[in-house]
Length: 424
Image (cartoon, rainbow, N blue to C red; front, side, top):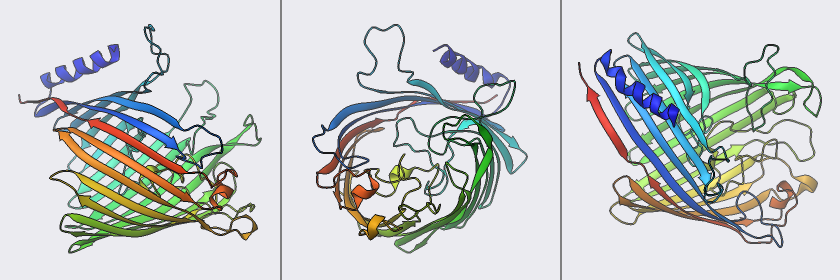
């Protein structure tokens, strides 16, 4: 709370020395109830379903001047009941600094952005904010940015450490693809309604010479190179991407060669939007030591490959890849409400053990969105996975015969609490 007061005090005093400034404070509150019966993986025999309420309370402070922008976001993410009542402190460490960055203008077209920040590009397949997860995703990084008349270039850099050591710089923080160093270049050209972007990403991971991870052995690097495009043809919107990963495979220092290809089309007719598409993510044959499995790294992976998170959401790394054929329809059910229906056909991209059928299953997703008040909306969702016997081969042998479904309800409240412009 003391830190929160200091930030507010600093932002309120800043108009004394600068001109043409704006200060804004907004909130992001959400509560989500979930019923899990096969979410993320197959439902085991004789298991009990899970149910809980997850919540987020986030405050965003922003300050915008002619040559300086500041943004600070604090949040508390918790589950109802995980903090015992009348405790003198929050024992679950749920309060955190989500973002804290400054962007300084460097001349007419250049700027630099430094600090803890969300990095998101295009459809958020490789870099995304992961807003579905209550905690979101951030990077401690420095960006050099160029923007002019439909051209955009970002150069990003990050170097991660555990504290402030006197000797050495070993970095051993657990987590999927947690990098020790990161460098990337992102270029985008925009026309009136279409765009084309190119991303070159290099991620460095701490290496170890033993399984117990006690003997540091340098840094190994994974490279991701690719493109994303978007263009309309009257009422038809076409988007696509292609990425290639090479270098060293996470979490071992072995040669990697992997790809991702995606193509989607959306057609709007009246109050209905119809979509169809496919995504191919390469994989390694089961039992093989080859490293051919693509992983979408730091994207909003919940958005892709079905909402039940069977693939690439903290899972499915170094696996058999995925072929995802999907179709969707979004119907306007009221003046502001809508219903989204999506279907996914999943198949392994690589060969399964004993030449098993590559078909993994079909998922059906339903999401209903209804605004209740200004800055308040209700969302309801239901998903069902019709898994095949082959799905159990990539999910630890758990049977595919049980019902696998998931339901949720979420209330999102994001009002603007305060806004003021200062002019000296």
